[in-house]
Image (cartoon, one colour):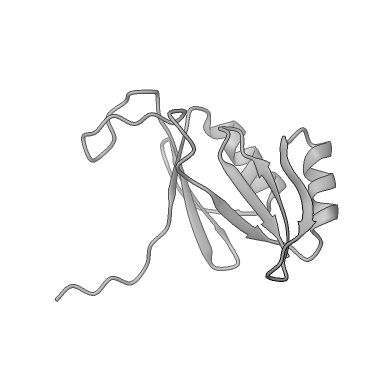
Length: 124
């Protein structure tokens, strides 16, 4: 039987440079791999990859990829201070979807949007 060991999401974008400015420059992910329009990033052991595609372009799987066809991806990023993080992201022009709020399960949480409109949860 096959043994699976690692998994990570691949985010499709229409503009790799803008997405890297968000994930790498604003959220602090480190670039760990690059091949053409595909970049892998790491933050505290978590990996996310970003691939630049044109709307309708066939992916490696042969199916068309539609980066703006819906929000089927959400990322959660932990921080020590949600309010400060949201303030810094807002100052950098990042859209804030949900203001910081304490949750019944004990986390403080807010949402921003990445450059392609994917919701990104910022929480403590």
